[in-house]
Image (tube, rainbow, N blue to C red; front, side):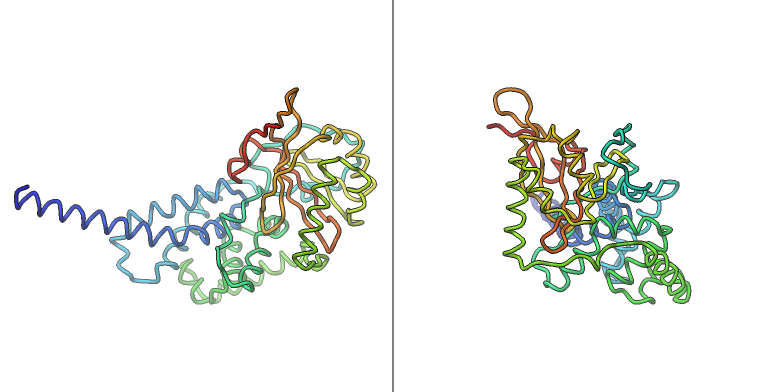
Length: 338
């Protein structure tokens, strides 16, 4: 190798090393940015697209960044702009409970709605930082609950960003104003309006009672065993008096043990013989549900069950039926063999 070739190689190694260092610095923020974009957009897939676009823009513009502000603040500014652009002209994502009153177990299922209608679940691993302080982790879990994310969608996009940054991430009004290119007064005003909107939503957080972890794991095991055996009486015994059942992409949702029981012994009876694989979503316990599919013991993906509990009672049974898309996101296999 000539001296000139050696010099070129050294320069190339330096450039490659610097680029790798930048990517590493940006990548460290992926989880918290995904959580932020998920709260803004209500979709796991949209959030991942937004974060990828954020990191690409940051990587391309890193030489112009030059440390003029904190890297984290700069990334949140980019992510906010990406999310605001994605929200332009889009409809508000919702849960079935947001779209109309509860149905009865005799109500026809009706046609499915488009994917963009619904709040989607997201794996805990994509949005909850590993090794975080327990108190911070508890706040993070609360702020990605399905009900809270659905409530956020009632806010105009900029109000949504203000509330998340101020209330969830604990940014100061001055920091949020700088990020949005606004005044502190306008940020405080937006926060006040956002709080008023959320206060009118029933987030049911006051009803949830947390069991000690050991007792809660026993409760989940009881549920999983009852569902695998399709023991309706045991399942109904676990239901809270205000329990709800929903099945996006369908509008239909039910409230109360009586209607849920009638559904489980009626149309839901096709779930008999299902197998469950544990997962976690939105700070909540979840299961991948596989229904029997023909002879040979094969089970195919059917739904991602995301469960909400209050004490030792099941408060929300949320079955997301877009299994073909959701299972890979949650690292769940697309087939179970006997």
